[in-house]
Amino acid sequence: MLRSLVGSEMCIRDRSLTIGYWNSSGGGLITEIHLVLEGPPRTELQRHVALQITYDDLPHPSVFVPVGDFFMDQAGSRSDPYESKYFAKRPRDSWHCLAPIPYRHSIRIQLVSQASEEVVGYTYVYHDSKKFAENTGYFHAIYRGNVGLRFPWEPAPILPAQGIKGPGHLVGTALAFTGELGTKFGGNFDHVCEGNYELFYDNITRLHGNDTTVDYRKAGYQTSDHVIAVLGSEDWYGYSYGWPGNEKNVGAASGLYGTRHSGTTYWDPPVTNGTRTLSTYRFFGAPLRFEVGAWGQVNWGYDTGHNVPSDLCPVGQGCRIAYSVMSYWYLATPRDVSGELDELPWKSPFEYI
Image (cartoon, rainbow, N blue to C red):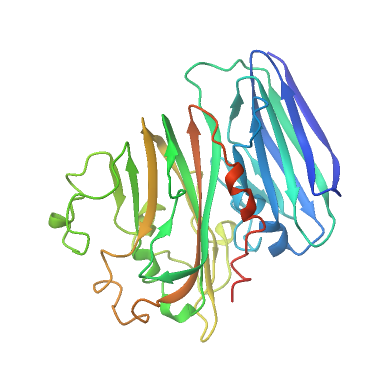
C-alpha cells in the first residue's frame, strides 16, 4: 500500500487553486487535509473562501462549502483550539480534517476565493492508495445557513429543500449561532436551545402527530418510522439544559466541555444590547443510515408558547438570528452541487447586523 503527501506554500491569485489531485483506476483515500490560510481578516476567510471537492473527474463538484465552517471554525475563527473525531484546530489557526475521504477513480481538492485580498498560506494533503471498496461511500460536507432567520417562527434548514439521495449515512453536524439581541438568549443559550433536530428519511416528510403540541404523547415522536427527532438542540449536541459555560469568552480547550464526539468551540456571555454567539459540534458513535433519501430541519414550533415564550419575539417577524449547520455524510454516489455555487461568498455571522 503506497502513501503519498502533497504539501507546499500557496497563494490564491486567480480565484481558485488545486491543492491535491490523484487519479487511480483502483481508487484511493485521502487521510488528512492540513490547511493554514492568511491574508484577509479571519471573519472574511471563514466564509469568502470555499473548499471544493470533485470526484472521478465528473463535470461538477460534490463538496462546495465555506472553508472555515468545513473545519468547524465557525465563529469568525474566534474559536479556541479543539480536537474532535474528524476535525481539529491548533494554535495560530492551523486546521486539520481527519475524515476518511475515499474515491473510486480520481479526486481533485480545490480552494475557491472571493476574498477582497490575496489569500496565502500552506497546505498538506495526505493520500493512501487503499482500493475503493464497493460498499464505500463518498464523503460529503453540506452547509446550510440563514443569516436573517426569524426566530422562533421560521425553521432552520439542515439540508437543501430537495433533500439528498441515498443510500448513505450521517456522521455528524456542527452548529454556529449568533443572536442579534443576545439578552433574549441568556443563561446557557436559553430559548434557542429548544429547537428540535428533525431528520426525515426515506420519503417521510413530516412527523405523525400534532405539529403544535408540546405533549410528547401526542407529537408522534415515538411512532414515526424513519424519523429522527431530538427534543432540544443541546441534546442533539450532547448536552442537557442548554450549553453550560463560564461567564467569559472560552473555548473547548480553555474550560468548556469537548471530546472527540461532542463539544463547544465558542461560547460568549449575554451582553446588554449586544449579540451572543455559540458554536458546537457532534459526531455520532454509530452512523445514522438511510436508504432512499434524507431531509432535515431545526424546528422551534413544538416549544413556542411553552419553553419559548410566545411574546419573546414579535409574532411572525421574530427575532433576527444567524443560524448555520454543517453536516457530514457518506453517500453512495457523488452529489452534483453545481447549482449551489452562486451562494459564495456567504455572510459571516458578524456581517448580518
